[in-house]
Amino acid sequence: MKPRAPSCSLSAWALALALLLATSVQAESPRRFALVAGNDEGGADTRPLRFARDDARKMHDLLLRLGGVEPGDARLLLDDDADDFLRALSELEASARAARARGERTTLLLYYSGHAKDGSLRLGDSQLDFEALKRRLSAAPADIRIAILDSCRSGALTRTKGARRAPAFAIESGASRDARGLVILTSSASDEDSQESDLLGGSFFSHHLTSGLMGDADRSGDGQVTLFEAYSHAYARTVADTADSSAGPQHPTFSYDLAGNGDLVLTDLRVRDEGLLVPRTAPAGAYYFVDPSGAVVAELDKAPDVERRVALAPGAYKVKRRLADRLRVGETEVRRGRTTVLDESRLRDAPFSDDPVKGVPSKERALRTSWTLGLTGGYHSFFDAPTREQLFLSTPLMGLEVGLHHYFREDWRWDFDLSLGGRRATLELPTLSGPSYRYSLLTVGTSLVAEFPLGSVSPFVGARLAYLVMGRDFEDASLPDQFYAVLTPGLVAGVRWRLPGRFELTGRARVHYLLYNVDAKRSLGYWELGALVTYRL
Image (tube, one colour):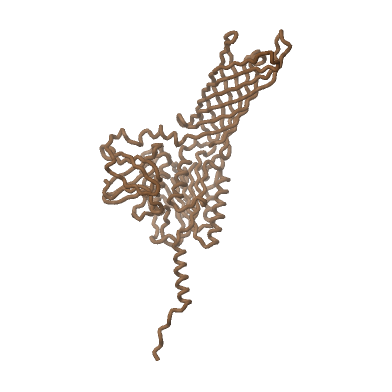
């Protein structure tokens, strides 16, 4: 008898289904966790940066929009110290560990923009050792760990076997689901400074990295930007833009220790159906996209007969394309949930003097400006002894103060203050039997001061204009109350200390001139000593 062909058993179907499900799970994108930190302050012997916090905000927003990171899996730290940094990292590690226990693949991405010196990240007055951070990342409970550091001499973190300073590195092609290990990208070599740009409104490296992740680095045109593409793009553009700078060329570095095959996709331009499409028919060249503040938020290098996409966030932008003898400029708007096609007919020829990026240093104030709010205590007294004993009494003060930093120019501060004080006293006059009264003082002032940052300490000096209202409120109702109000110009000087976190402590002295002209013209002077605790908003 001829044997019959065996039929597919239920167990075979189950095995096939299990393999299919396993392949499906394996193909899923890993769950991504992101710690993004920016700190403009670096403690002693460093000068505050201008754009580190702005760079961190941009990277955080980009990872949420295009990087596959859910809001609950991201942490954004601005001007926080090393303890806050490690605490946030521990929280993300715990979440990644729980996800892996459920069978999920995980990626942990760390981005830092700020100071680094002597082998440590400098977060305000606190420090985080490079090697300790690298060991922490190596042991982190995630399948893939990616660290991106934008700081001076950050290449010290990759100064180990396998680290390179080069425009590109080879990664086997294929899906990235099998990759495991640690990747570190830094903005500069171990002996180089990382440079910021007023025109870009950020650091060279972070600008070109984020611009690349929004589409400029997508050389394959598949709508995804991989680690290889992003680093290669950021390297080439950073070196080119800093080659002629006073600090010299800046060379990003990388170190990777990956097991398995495949490049790592960092952003997917297709995840949101919005952005700007530069059609195939548009002229070739370098396109620049400028936001309303005047900062270049993205760039795009278009070749002939190639369609390019840049995943700009919804908003209005100016578009610039530089030609040999003129500019092509115009405006476009990216709407939420829609892809906008750039219309070449809406661009116009313009001379170089109409460059929309020109004048950015004056417009950047909106990006760098910050506010502080504080409580103040002090003491007010006149220099002349008879005046402070009988006419205008020495008085303790309590008040509020608001500071606007870096508005007129870098390291200038514009303060607005309000203080109240009072005390009980007895009027000593020959004809009266010492009537009692309450002396009150109200001061409203504004100061413009220049600071001289020296690490965490910033001495300052400036001018002040105050309006004083001084009064006597007699207990004896038969005696009329007395008030005197006057404008007084003066000078102010002091020192501001930056404390851990967002708090600051200020000690200061003020000297003012006052013209008293009630019964006779008298030139008087008074002084104020005060201490101020402020919080950076």
